Length: 356
Ligand SMILES: [Zn+2]
Ligand SMILES: [Zn+2]
Image (cartoon, rainbow, N blue to C red; front, side):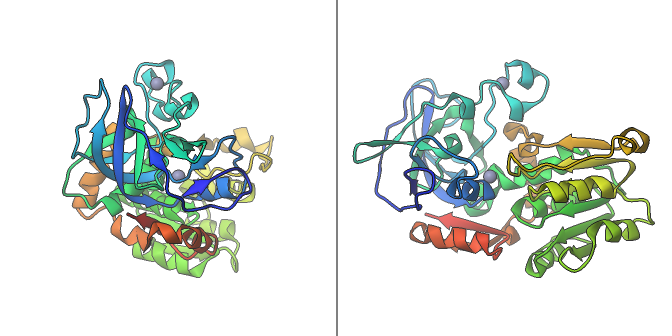
């Protein structure tokens, strides 16, 4: 799936893919989940400077490795992580792996795809919407062979972002009450993370009734249709008028972020997971911020450390605690990728996945 530039349509083309260079891995993709960040690129909300191969939620099998690669070998099953990290920079030593100062996203300069006289960049250093891609070694995380790769692909971005926000960022405690704005792939993963952490009240909020049904299936104890009810009032009503211990915004809209902050109880924690437009914002009362002693946190990619979090999330999957299979509501061949993004815009899927 090739995007020649901002504002151009997504095209399915036949490209050539380089052999892996020093420290690189060539992966045969089995599946690539479709994430809203791809849509932001397609809609030029996130402008890109180079022609690229879209997609960043991939899983597959290592085909070949370049010189110096030691952590994976041909035949290994891998998930491609959006938060590759070096483990040695200041932020990594601080435990802020998603803020790694040397992550390949920041490095760029990898153009493994070629179409006519064009060199194409892999989006997010992954380029998962292609049968083959070439990534840095620390982007390909080995997993056990028994995990279905279609379900595993979701861990790469949406699931680690959502589950990680609950477990790593908010550090939800057993018995807590949680309210989650948004029931897309990320919001439903926040919900599951809160459930796995032992929260007893799980409130999911969306404007799409079909997505609220997904939330009920994945463990929501209450759902709020924000198109007909005021979500802040409803969260307060469901938590004895106090507000939720933990609130999450997993949409990327300033207004919803403000609602999530408002609906957290005094002393509670509001975690912002959604990435909105850079010109959108929300406001806080200068009088109430200190008085209510709430904590407002940002959570990028679930504050995730893939080498730690993928194995434990797959353990939860095996134990039946983390439902990945239900998140995959439609699979598409690559030829239908444009339709798949239209379905995303229409809110039809929890997660659509392109399968190779
Ligand atoms: Zn993503
Ligand atoms: Zn680092």
